Image (cartoon, rainbow, N blue to C red; front, side):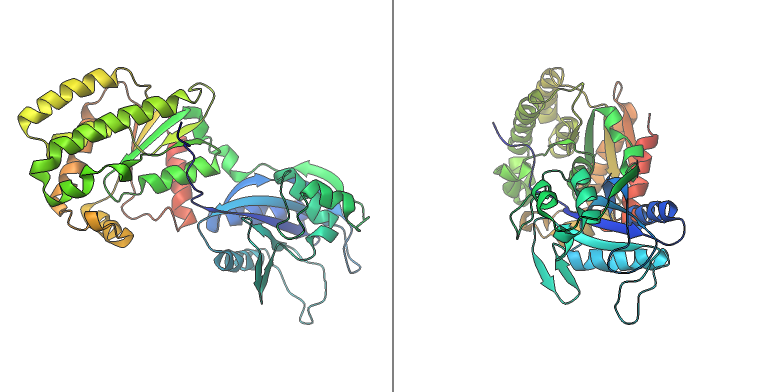
Length: 382
């Protein structure tokens, strides 16, 4: 049986937040919201812990840890967090000494990487000596292993030299929890070539702990041949895709409980029908449709079918950027025909919960605001 969960698409970072000036709880919540809205998706939030000021005389701190997912590199994430601190009113000591602060945000871990740069050391070099880091860390990553010390978080807590008090105060929700795409159980995401369907499926599956069902199109031997000679290889390509997609969906979905698991796929079997309508002759399509209808009856239907629409100009830009040799000769007419085929299908289909989202002017991979907008569109769908 093939492994369905692909290699990670996003980076995962654990951040430590602390505040001992002003309304500490409000400042933590505002910083979490700022990070989620502008920098990275906040998928987990620990409890809030109150601890004494460490290394100087000051008011007690509220501390928490969060897990974020992002396509940003560590240095880019760090710059975003400095902006978040500035937005929270952080003022740094001119001498570098510890002082009270409205908000303090540190990168504790970034994937399993060990980073040594002038302005960034990961894992944080003093985390193993700080209860206010370790206790919240255990909440969000109870099995986390220090990549240098080779101790898990529970062992770090048991052996730390820090004996300061660390009192649980309350729990804050993660911003992602209110979006609830899980209500659909099974989401299929489709779009034209270059629309970003796989990127979105990967982000959602990682951010909401879904089972990812990817289309394994790269294994199709007819695809490069088709782009060179469409008339000759169209029927072979479409029949191969249909058989592969049916077998993939049958095998993949059978591994999950469609009533309790959350499943995200970056394709649906209807994709075969739409592409074949564009590429096949009329006689070929009639035969193809008969076979398709037999297979379609046997497959589970998604709770939500999403079509990502992008105009032809943007599609061509994305195709060129990702640089697959066999895609570089795709014509605007071909892409427009595919778009038209999807939209005609969506108008006529029955018994399928459909959501069309125009992402022509959106960059939901690199712009957090665009990604949250898209998630909002999904969450508002009934």
